Image (tube, rainbow, N blue to C red; front, side, top):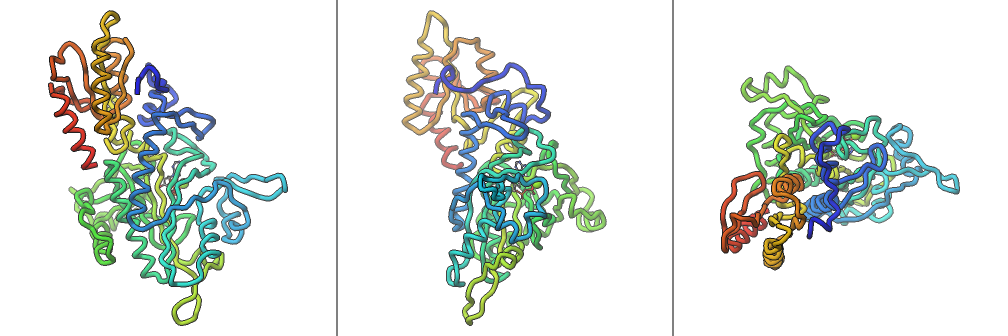
Length: 444
Ligand code: ATP
Ligand code: MG
């Protein structure tokens, strides 16, 4: 892709309306454009990154056996009246009337819609468990939309729902999502800690929020530092293995302010291991038993001939919020250097030829290198403009391809100037560069 032809409208300075670094960078490099308060258009750079995140989320859902569906954004008020949430949900729900004067709404979440699908499709315990998910826009008329897409009114969410016969089976489903969330955030190169959470308006009795540390986060957290040393490596999808994983995390005190209790914190965590800080909620999982299935009569036949309401959980990931969360975690705003994790980077490599008006040989060389990289499925952006070197580097540092190749005076013969964005430059052959990037791509 040539920079001169791409739609990446970079601003010279930080936009003054943006208060946190993710919002600043997203406006600065034109990843998004505000349409109205808390509602954004996604421009090519931002959209490409969000789609890559979505794809990783999808792959990890599929790996635990969840099946993808797509429910509409607009829902009928009828099912929300059945669950009792039509009145309870309050002003965050955007209510609409159609031409028949029917009450509709723009979905803030989908427990009712998916329960309606389930009850009309499944009748027997033999079809369970069912794990269903979709990735769809949501609308919540947040009282204070802010920080760009971090707290938007319209936002993109993956929400999954589990249906089981018994509580025990349902906890097994819950634990599958617990593992898949740890795996998902790891692939996005984020450390997300599961924290015991309040069950809030969705209701129920078991819940974890997945939080990444960031000073600009809106959640206050109280945690035992040792939780950061845990990982989910090697965990199998078996029941006992998943139980062990959750127990391993739950042995350390880790909660958000809603569940915080100072006496417990001081009793369970020694002073040197206490960490009180802020974080961004990127995912949230709930178990709520038969709260919706009972209200909406979603029952299945049991082996003995009886019927029972199914046991449900719901599992959300803020896909659009994750774009901002990754920036909060990775952007060095002092030096204005962004380095996207390779797994979601908009381009793998920035090719920066030093172009002189009378001499286009560097651009030709860049085109040849690009052809070679394409053969190895390495995605490249070429700065084909004739701006000066320092402004070229500045721009590419903001766009944030994880690697840069500079074709200038110092690239001599077959050796090229290569660096990880923000890191030291090395002189390497193209073959060596391809080898380094390919190796990283595989481990991602
Ligand atoms: P919050 O406490 O941040 O309002 P929530 O508890 O209301 O979140 P859930 O209903 O659990 O959120 O939604 C699942 C995920 O969707 C959240 O973990 C978050 O990542 C994302 N999310 C929720 N509200 C927004 C929003 N207004 N803008 C962007 N992402 C959001
Ligand atoms: Mg909320």
